[in-house]
Length: 226
Ligand SMILES: Nc1ncnc2c1ncn2[C@@H]1O[C@H](COP(=O)(O)OP(=O)(O)O)[C@@H](O)[C@H]1O
Ligand SMILES: [Mg+2]
View 1 (cartoon, rainbow, N blue to C red):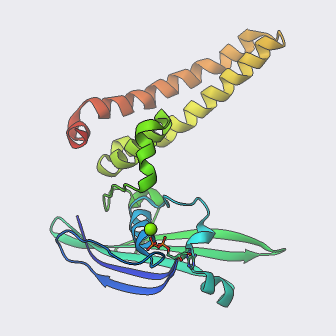
View 2: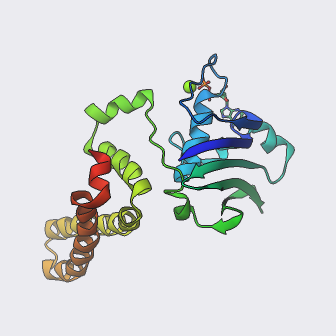
């Protein structure tokens, strides 16, 4: 997969950028605050529909666009050479005003001009990002390492990506239930009530968990990671 062309509109400090990229390695040099990191962030966003730096999409839209328009939007478009063909990945991030100073964030995703879901972006353009703060991957918590690997693996294995979301949901349900059970025990409530709710949760966590493990232990994923 190669990015042939990247186009940014009102993304971070780029009011407008049209950039042709060569097929070989690219080194981006520039003074501080020129937009090197923002360029990588745009590419990462297109690949994962998430920013590595912020969970607030508001920060991704150019400050001036927010002053000049009631419905400011940032847009990232890339032409990606993939196998025989060239595909167009297109993400628009919009802020829409709501009554009473509220605002709503909307993300519009298109693949080759056709509206799609955020999850359809994953795998269209595989990226691995390594930032200075990622040295924490070595010394930090296992959750950081799991998240990093999950992001990378999801892009090369659609089954793995599909199993991640239900697994995460079931895991947090199970943890919430375990907390309830612990406080029920503390207040001498009836454990059996909690255990009834626990059993189906355990079952579904095992099912999506085992799909994740299966994908880890066999098939193309494993050879990609090692
Ligand atoms: N939403 C935004 N609108 C306009 N400028 C922004 C926005 N977010 C960040 N910036 C500015 O963009 C500049 C580029 O930042 P960055 O990409 O981190 O530069 P570099 O990595 O080259 O040092 C910084 O001056 C930052 O303040
Ligand atoms: Mg930087």
